[in-house]
Image (cartoon, rainbow, N blue to C red; front, top):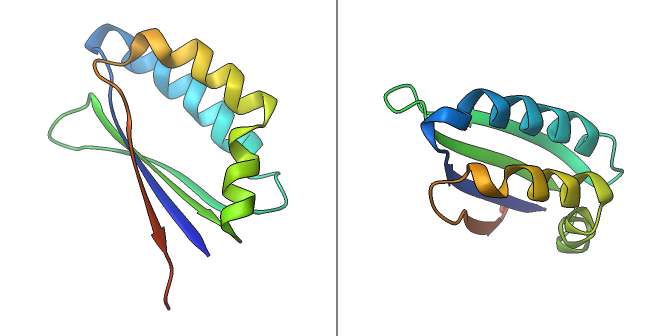
Length: 95
């Protein structure tokens, strides 16, 4: 299984629209056959910091996710909301 953690910092004035757009994209992503889990996590001490936690059946499913129309739309909508480029770390689940 492939785990991806996406670390994002959002401009303060865009936090609420970012949450709305991201939750919509997450719900749609969960309908993908290879997406097993999608969590949107917000830092309790800094409300502009978010982590997206994604779990896919395989690396191929993770790559396919990036090609989905809902992901492309989300990237377009949220690009100007970010304070800095997102950082993506990928992991292989061992247990």
